[in-house]
Length: 254
Image (cartoon, rainbow, N blue to C red; front, side, top):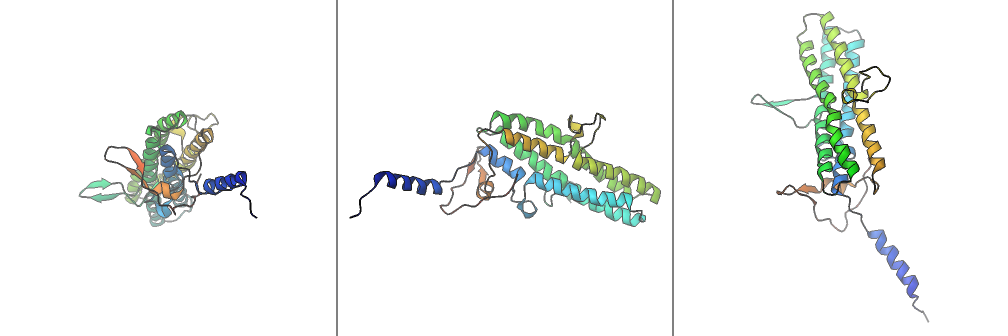
């Protein structure tokens, strides 16, 4: 005769239901996930800051090719145009510049700044996130300014009167593209990133990763379902849509 073992039954039920429990991320962590893991409108739905860094890498490749390969003026202009296109693509309508996909360095970084700011303003944000969110826009300013300078240099190179002029300008553009990715030691003290004007995207990423290590409770990668189902209500409040019972899966990211 089978005898009910109540303690064993309770243990089995606990394991069963704990295995089905889904931990809901904080709103703050979800906005951070938009920068680090996934965003619905980016190429391959990658995180906004990830896209910014990848585009900066492409921009540097094209800029270095323009500055160092010794081709003719047409080759320089072609490479520079590619560098500009992945740094600060612009769409115009009626003379008004629209910032929208495709995402260049500038567009992706602006999106990351927005979501880090949303994270810092969330009611469930830790003081660690609040402090970081206050610093992040300031540390991004130099990168955004360099993006605009790269666009202006691209325009100058497109109408350069000589190969020599185009080469000089291309070298300047390559310096800016390098700084956008790797930062620069502006005060020549041997340290890159001790002031906002020295920041590149890699310094921003390091700063973000350091902040995430400090999070308590710990930050864990937010799943795609939550990343893509966070909505802002007319009141300005952020809420998740109702989660289907079969929704699941993890997202890879920082």
